[in-house]
Amino acid sequence: MLMISSLSMIMMIISSILIILASIISKKTFTDREKSSPFECGFDPKSSARIPFSLQFFLIAVIFLIFDVEITLLLPLVVTMKSTNTTSFLLISSVFIIILLVGLYHEWKQGALSWAY
Image (tube, helix red, strand yellow):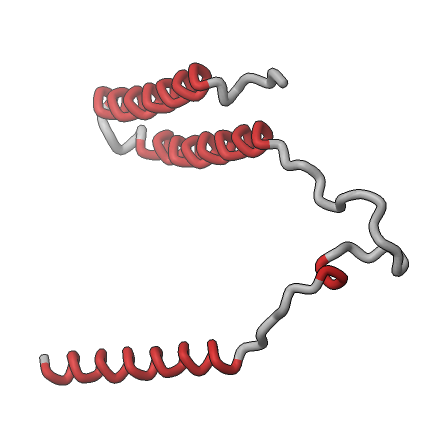
């Protein structure tokens, strides 16, 4: 027990020293207006290079990712259908699908799925 605690303490000290050294040695960057602006043949840019980001598109993308992951969790249920009895399979799959539908209904009611401007 003493050996494990002393080894963990040595590892913590070494990692702390490395973190401090890395922060001291790392390059410091200073913000410069010329370096942070987009390059347009040496001239000042005519307009902003950063276009406005659509929050609606981001919400739809996040919802798609969530439902995509949940569908990949549904796929192994088909494989387990042969090894389990029918009632437990139906119970598990129906609870999972009900959770998905409740989440979809919630997102719909919150207005995350509307494309109104």
